[in-house]
Structures are given as C-alpha cells and as structure tokens.
Amino acid sequence: MYVLGIETSCDETGVAVYHDQKGLVIHLLYSQVEMHSDYGGVVPELASRDHIRKLVPLIKQSLRESRLESKDINGIAYTAGPGLMGALLVGAATARSLAWAWQIPAVAVHHMEGHLLAPMLEQDPPDFPFVALLISGGHTLLVWVQGIGRYEVLGESLDDAAGEAFDKTAKMLGLGYPGGPRLAALAEEGRPKIQFPRPMTDRPGLDFSFSGLKTHALNAFHAGAKCEQDKADIAAAFQEAVADTLAIKCRRALQQTGLNRLVVAGGVSANRAIRGALAVMAEKEKARIYFPRTEFCTDNGAMIAYAGCQRLLAGQHQGLDILARPRWPMSDLAPV
Ligand code: KG4
Ligand code: ZN
Image (tube, rainbow, N blue to C red):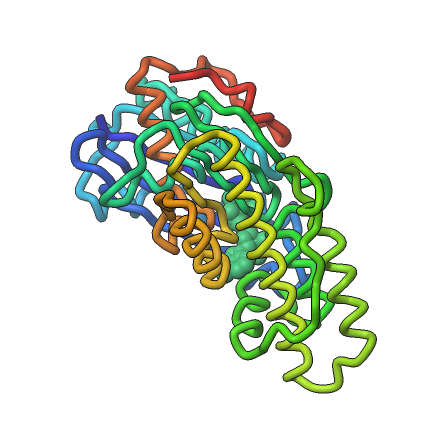
C-alpha cells in the first residue's frame, strides 16, 4: 500500500510517500523559516498562503521523483491537528480533494502521533509498550504508549512547551527566529556557570513548567550579560536546566510505569545536549532510548505518511469531511 503523507500544521510543508512493505519511498520538505524570520516568529496567514503555493508542486515532485503515478497511490494521510487552523486547512482540503478525485481513502492524522511514531521509520524501531517524551514547539508530553492510538498522558507542560521556552528565551537574547536551533548553537560556545532551577522536580508528579526558566534567563541577561560569552553562558545554563529537568521526569516515568523503553521525539529532540542527557539517564536506568534521525525530529511528511498508513491498514479512514482541529487531545484517538 502506497500512502501519500501531507504535513502543513505550522511552518513546514512536508510531503512523503510511504509503502507498508518497502518503507519510506520519498520525503520532501519546504521550510518557511526564511519568510517568517523577518517577523521574528510564525505569521499564521503567511504560513497558510505559502502552504498553498508549495504543497501541490511538492506532491507532483514526490510522485515524479519516486516514479509513481497518481493511480499507484492507495491512500492519503494528512495532518488534521493540532496546529494553525489556516495552515491545517490547506493540507486537509488538498488531501481530501485528491482522495476524492483519485477515489481512495483519506485519513486524518494527529500531528503528535506522527512525532511519536517517527522512530518507527528507523532501522531498529521500538516495540510497544514504551514511554514517549514528546517535545515540540507547541507540546511537552510524557505518554504511556501501549500501542498505536492507545495513549495515556502521564504529564504535560502547565505553561510553555519546551520548544516555546527555547524560542522565547532565544528571542530575549536577541537571537531571532528560529530560536531553538540558534540558542542550541550558542549554548555550545558557553559554560553553564549560572545556577538555573529544575522546575517542578522537587515535588511528585510528571508535569512540567518551563516559563520560569525563560524569566530566569531574562533576569540573568539583565543582571550582567556584557559580552557574547556571557550570553553563551546563559544559553548553556538554560539548555542544561531544560535537559536535566526532562531527564529527571523521564526517569520518574520509567520507574512509575516499570517500562524500560523510552522514545523521544518532536523538534526539541534534535537538540544534542538534550539527547545526551537523556541517553545518560536511560543507561543508568538500564532502559533503551529511541530517537528519530535528526531530520525527522522536526516536522516532516514522512511521520504523517507512516502514521496514516498504520491506520489505513487497520481499515480506519474518514468520510468526505475536511477535518481540521487546532486543538485535539491525544487521548481522543481511536486505538489501532
Ligand atoms: O516538532 P516541531 O518541528 O514543530 C512543532 O510541532 O511545534 O518543533 C519545533 C520546535 C521549535 O520550538 C524549535 O525551536 C525547536 O523545536 N527546536 C529545537 C531544536 N531544533 C528545533 N530546540 C532546541 N534545540 C534544537 N536543536
Ligand atoms: Zn511538530
């Protein structure tokens, strides 16, 4: 079964073709980063318009380069949420229209389920059950994963998501957009000399709070960042605090569930220091850790094609409605 995957929930237009037996056939990505960087963040209306410009050419290119014709495609998977309403609607309407024209089923995919399943595209994928840490621009979630669509949220951020905290802190340090990777690059030049808190680790539970770290960084910045090196040191201390906090909560989640497999996915899982801290923790806990390859940590069409393929194989798809849900709790998903 060939599945065309379409991702347009935020600022990347992602298209991929996944085959249930042959694996990933092709994936293409167009990032809007350059366009939004003039504004210091994602401008939703511009994002929607750019998806309109880029999506159909990318779909055509993906078929051409994989030497497939439209009649070879057996199903279409599209991100139906969560995300920016206008951006989601571009992908959903295009996917639903193509599926109607080609007389094939279309399946609405949850963006965070896409992230969660991204490590399944790798050589040595995890078996169920496992604990998943999902760290993106909009979400920070710890999930007990029994199988596809069988998710129990163990903890989540009560304020900023991990990626949002990176982005806002980067903005305060004058690093612009996209903040996460820029702050990470600066942190590599610094040393974590300033003590940052590890929010919500002094009490039981698996929820997160990252907005205080941002304020802490701002205070440190105003208190005496005189040169580039000072800024790099603040970035390093901030990044270490996020990494440490995530590791502490993941250790707790592994201990609480008795599981020994941890999946880490979403844009922030591309961060080297965070990957390192989590790997050290997992080794101490005698747990195995699974990451997507770096390019599949951030948004992409491959994870959507994969997730949609699993649901289509199980006979799940939606009718003619164009589905777009800016808010969509993971616990609402149907099991496969
Ligand atoms: O998963 P993603 O591509 O989009 C959402 O679903 O939100 O995640 C984007 C987030 C942004 O906040 C971005 O700054 C962050 O991931 N990010 C990083 C790194 N690469 C991307 N944060 C820290 N270090 C990185 N290397
Ligand atoms: Zn994402």
